[in-house]
Length: 75
Image (tube, rainbow, N blue to C red; front, side, top):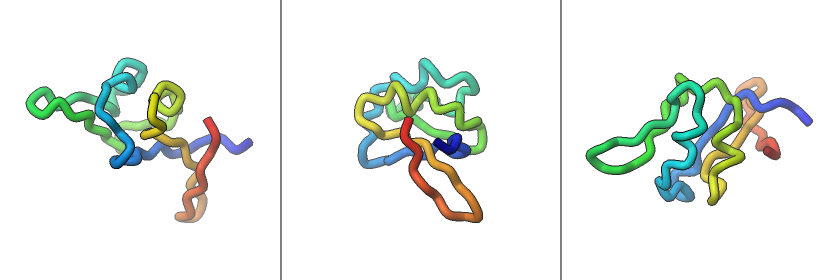
């Protein structure tokens, strides 16, 4: 199984529950206190995959990106 090198979010699936925020070791996932929406900063993300394991609706998913082509990776 290839290792994930990129994590992406399905914006349509995310229900902004905030569970991912608690497990993100680099604060790539934060909450906007005004809107109560979960924000995802892909630049900070290290692709550890913790959020993909805890997301109850599969809103966060691991990918392997090679030569600009993205392939899903099972968590």
